[in-house]
Length: 610
Image 1 (cartoon, rainbow, N blue to C red):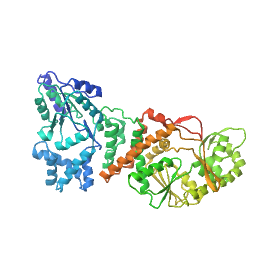
Image 2: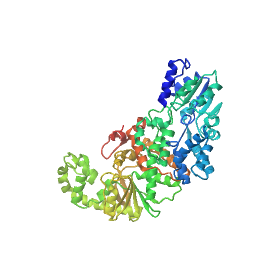
Image 3: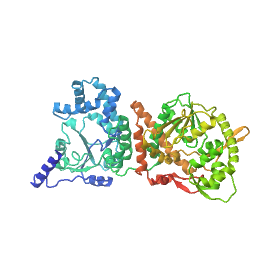
Image 4: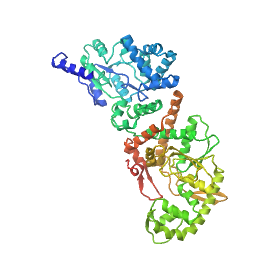
C-alpha cells in the first residue's frame, strides 16, 4: 500500500502534476537544525504524542493491560484494540474515546464503561511526561514570538489532551487541529488540507515522529517537515533492543518505558544513550536491583527473624534496607550491622593441619610467601622470601604449614573464642531464625559461622557464584539471582565489584577480635574511606532512595506492579556491557586494595568494561 502511494507520487512529479517546489523532510536532525529551520517559517506545527510528550510505558497500548489488571476484565487489551477498528468501520469517520467505549459496551459486553473510560483517561494524564529538549525548543520559539499550532491524530478528548499538555509545560499555542474533533486525519492527508487552507500564504514547518503522516504527507500541501524519532524508535536502533523481551508484562512495560522515555531516550537527539551523573547512576543502575533484593528479603523472612547485615557491604546495605522499609511503611525486622569477613571467619576454624592444607589448596593467592603467612595465617616469620601462586605452588608452602601449624591452631582457638564473645555481646545466640544478609556469592561466611557456632544458619543473598558452600543439608542459601536457575545470572557475579564499590564501609576489612576488659574489640586493616569515595557513594545513595520513592508511587497507582527479575538483570548488564556509563563516572570508581597492593585500581578496568 505504501509502495503504491510512493510510485503514484513519483508518477505525478514526472508528469508535472505537483507543485514545482516540494519541501523535503529532514530525518537526522539536532536541536540547532530545528531552530534554524523554525526561524525561516511563519508557523511552527507540532505533532503531540511521542513528539512533545511521551509516556512512562514501553508501548501505549500497554495502558489497556493496566486497565485489564485493575478491573479484572478478561482480554480487555485485545478487545480495546479491536473496538477502535470496529468503531471506525461502523461510523465511517474518525472516532473519539466515547465512540470506542460504546462499541466495547454494545459489541463486547463490557459493563461499567464510564468508570473504565475515566480510568483510562486518568492513566494517560498520570503517565505522560514532556520530551525535555522538545519543550526547550517550544519555549525558545515562544520567546521569539513564533506562532505555534498542534496537529494530532488521536481518539482522546481535546480537553484530556489539553490537560496533558499543560501538565508537561506546553502552553501558548494558537490552534489545535485534532482528528476526532475535525473528522480529518494526518494519515489520510485530509487534516493537512484544512491546515494549509487556514494558512494559505504562510510558510509552515511541521515537526513530528511519523515517517508518513508527519514527514511525507504534509509535503503535498507545501508544508516543510522535520522528522524526529520517538524514544522507543531510538531505543530499537541501539543494542538495548536486544535486551528487551518481545512479550513484556505490564510491570516490565512500565519499567522499560520509564528507562527509555524518561531517561535514556527522552531526547529526540539521543543516538548514544549515557548515564553521566551519580544521582542518575544510583536511580537507574543501582535502584532497581536493590529494590528487588529487599522485596526478595521481605518474601524470605518473618517478622520475628534477626537480620545480620555482614560487613563491609552491609554497612550501606543496612542503611538502604531501613530507608526501603521506611518509604514502604513496612515494619523492619530486627537488624544488626554484623562484623565479618572471609579472612576473620575462616581463621577461627583452622583447628588442624588438614584445615590449613585445605585453605592452601582451595583458595587463590598470588604474592610472597611471607605475605601469605602474615595476611592469611597471622604468622610473622623471618626467612628468605619467595613468590607463590596458590593452589599451584602448594608443595612450596607445605613445609611452612608443617612448621607453623601448632602456632596457627593455637591462635585460631583464641580468635574463635573472641569471635564467639563478640557474637554473644552483639546479637546474642545464632539460630535458624538468624538470617545472614549479604551480596553473596558462595556463602563462605555463612559456612564458617555455622562451623564456628555448630548451628545451621540461613542466608539471603543477591547473587550466587558457581561454587556455593553448604555446611549441611539443612543449610539454607537463598539467592535472588541464582545461577542454578538461570546460568546467565553469573554475569552479575562477574560484575560484582561495581556493586561492592558502592557498598564500601568507612573502615577496613575485619581481621579479627582481641579481648579487652571482658569485651571483644574488632581489629581492622588500615584501609579507610576517602572523602572523594564517600561523596561518590552518598550521591549514588540519593539516586537509589529516589528510586525507592518513585517505585512506592507506582505501587500505589498499580498494585500489581512487580518488575521481573530478568528485566532488572538485563538492564543492569546492558549498562555495563554497552558502556553507557560515561568515563567521568567510571573514573570515580578508583580504589586501593591494601590487602594485595598499594597500587590504585579501577573497578571498570578490572572487569574489562572501561
